[in-house]
Length: 391
Image: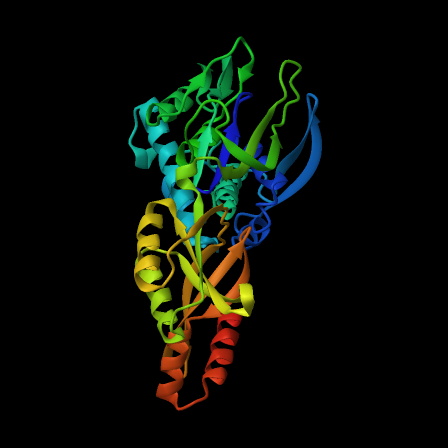
């Protein structure tokens, strides 16, 4: 759990507030392309800077060419999700959010899940809220997300089903299926919407005050109203975990008296012991002796096994351990066909955008042998095919 987030929902939460916080963090760069892939939705987003109370925040507004979106069943929403081009993990998360909303509506109104018409939830802006939030949180690459108690508000609210008491019945039904904490309010109206609570319930674990963490980024998202009693915002704090057990460790030793032919075996042993990566760095030690630094990146859980492998396979009699942070881009695999030979391609994404396209070398080498072609030609062909598929 090296990269963690904390949601401050002390002023409530809604889908657009979450989008604003994610936009503030630069995590919505990939959203326009996802919306463009579903022209029947006719949706776009506009991001502006606003003030809520004494805080500057980002506001995300959804525009649509469909001025009268129809009520949608869960099946209708699924067809929209299926039409969008987005990572499979994002689609799956969005499906789960809508499943939560459908189940809550079913419970509140006493009807079958398949017969639920979302009304407000089926509106275009809420589809965008759910997809955008799932995409943004996915792109952040968090290992864990916790949440403050959610302020729900009180009073009454007008809905398609008539006036309902606050906290809203659907919001309470959603919370009933989670471990999230919540609290009401004193006549402040609706502070938490079903959409916002469903998204938080999908991604966040119960929390209270901000956990021990290193603060790297702060995203502040604004709701539509500008309340006189509290800033109508959601804050998303992102950084490194301060939990020592969850940090990454760098285990290293200087080796100057080992037969160099044994060094590849040392690397293999470190990886087999659980190291995420292992490498050698040439150095010059005292008295001009050439040597190597043997390095292994590992989690705390594997550190003891990695050190044991280092002592067993190398000639070192000591090792040092340094706690480090590791940030990993989201990764996925696709396949391309190079003249009948399968080559896997590893894609890396940052904020939803592909920043690295790397053919798997073993596949390239196998294909080159089968085709009697230079490996560099197969490598170039596979890379070009992958980039063409992405475009």
